Amino acid sequence: MDWCFTAYYPNHYDNEKEYDVVILLHGTNGNNRTLVDRVPLEEIMKKYEDKIIILPNGFNSYYLDKVENAIINDLIPFLRENTNIRSLNLGGVSMGAFGALRLSLKYPNIFENTILISPAIWNPVPPDDCSVRKMCAFGRPFNEEIWMNNSWFRNEENLSKNNYIVIHGLQDEIVEVSNCYKFVDYCEDNNIDIKYFFINGNHDSKVVEEGIRTGFEVIFNKNVI
Image (cartoon, rainbow, N blue to C red):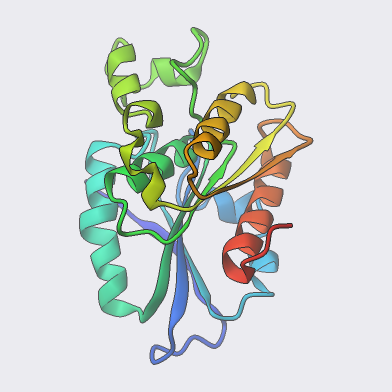
């Protein structure tokens, strides 16, 4: 598989220094440049001098199979070998947030925090007109059982081993906010570490930008805004 990622390093990077690293996963029909081109990531990162952002290409994979293997078995070992990592964090947008949540549950001891922005976590299944049903990630034709087997509500045993930050638009027309309420309610009912921010906005770049700002503020400054 031909695969690449985009990396944001501080201007005065020093390979002897420790850095917090965030692997940030893009959404449907995006690539490793999407969150650089559509969000003022460089401007956001100006306030953080010792952080590294890694943006892998996830295609439309929902971060299953080959892309999952590339992240876990290639990208993370590469980062550990070449970067002095203080903390490794995971985040994602829409499809990428589905992937981030799933990876955090499958590999609960790798990531310190997981940021979920407009997460595509339809519960129990995506609506009939949803684009994911036209993709190959969950079979062709779309297999609802494969979807549910890869969803958080069938893999909740490791939720308690993770720290979550959820940001979702109240007017989201792609992933109705009730899907996120189910996740947040489950976490709260089971004493799982979660911070959540339901904000005005749709499934768009404005919510993504605010989500990145909020998520980074929480994990880097340990604040709840």
